[in-house]
Image (cartoon, rainbow, N blue to C red; front, side):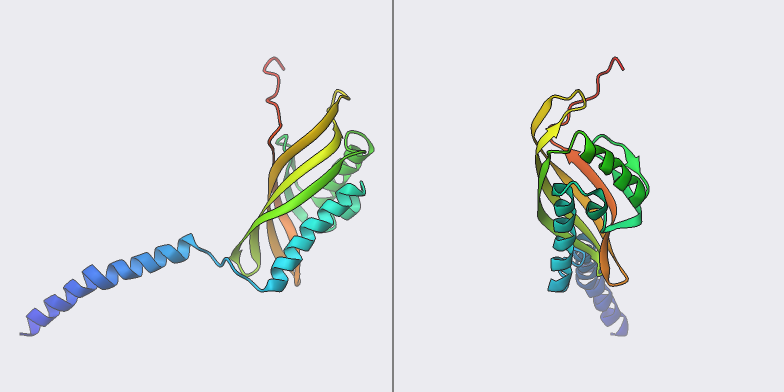
Length: 175
């Protein structure tokens, strides 16, 4: 009798408890913490708003205020910067030239909390008033940026930024 109960128990574990545990583990892995305190969501959106405000004032220092010192920044052209200072210097040059009349609008589309202190932020952006490198008008641009933000010292900062420009053109293959 003991072996029969043991076999039944083993079957229950294999066919019921095992798959249940696997599906719960899979659900947890597929769905990281997607909710955090409301003040975190507001703070993250404020980081994006401050970035946009700095851009629209053509103030590279203000635009970069919420970037980590060791940010990894990948521009829409695929250029990589590894510090807030480098991003700030590059944008100061752009604001003095190609982007001096630009206006940018940012809309946070999604925030996914990977941990309570790490969030992936999807942001749709559009821009008017920019110039192309050849000096011609670039009347409208739009794209997506993914910010990876970390809560450091109680403050959300951008630690990684990857930007896509929907209007970007492929480089000339002859170059």
